[in-house]
Image (cartoon, rainbow, N blue to C red; front, side, top):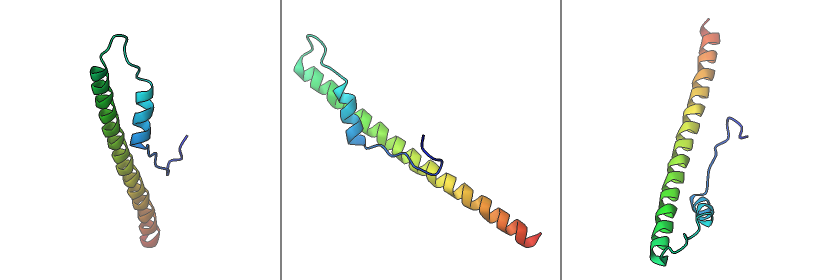
Length: 81
């Protein structure tokens, strides 16, 4: 499990290729339809992973900001009380 201060970053292309590897062509499916389906799945996967990575980055930054604010509050509290 990742530590609280470690970001999880997924390589979008590698992840999409892994997803595609598990998406076999259906019996009797035309090649063109299969390729379109694979392309759609690839693009959706890449975009979803990019969204995840962006959210992870934002969450990580927010967590760091929260930790910084807590430390500053403690410093101010000790200094002025």
